Amino acid sequence: QVQLVESGGGLVQAGGSLRLSCAASGIIFSLNDMGWYRQAPGKQRELVASITSGGNPDYADSVKGRFTISRDNAKNTVYLEMNSLKPDDTAGYYCNARRVTIRGLFSYWGQGTQVTVSS
Image (cartoon, rainbow, N blue to C red; front, top):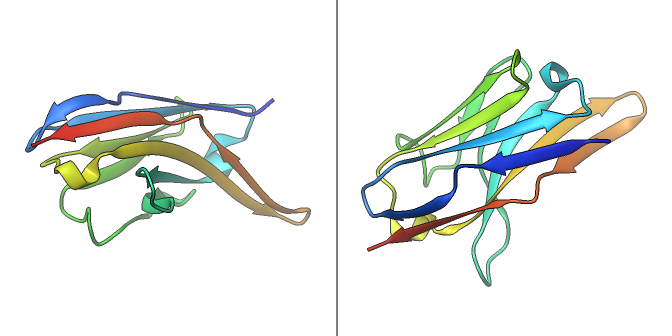
């Protein structure tokens, strides 16, 4: 079965850094576009950063210049390096794997990891 397991969340002071990891199994990782989403209490889930199967990254305007997404296909893992963290970055962070095939769209989610930024 498909599993996406996030790790690396925690409590950090404003201005600090965290590195999130998402280890995937049960999928052909290299063929999937990967994304990091976040959801704060009372807010909708939003896309933070994504990276295509070909390695092209994209970022939400709110994190550009502060966050970096990367992937290691040999380790079936996607990372989110978060620097200059702000209290507004506080949220549950979720990993997503997405692939479009002739059979349709396949999308999988991890269980999430909490990031809390104190002011």
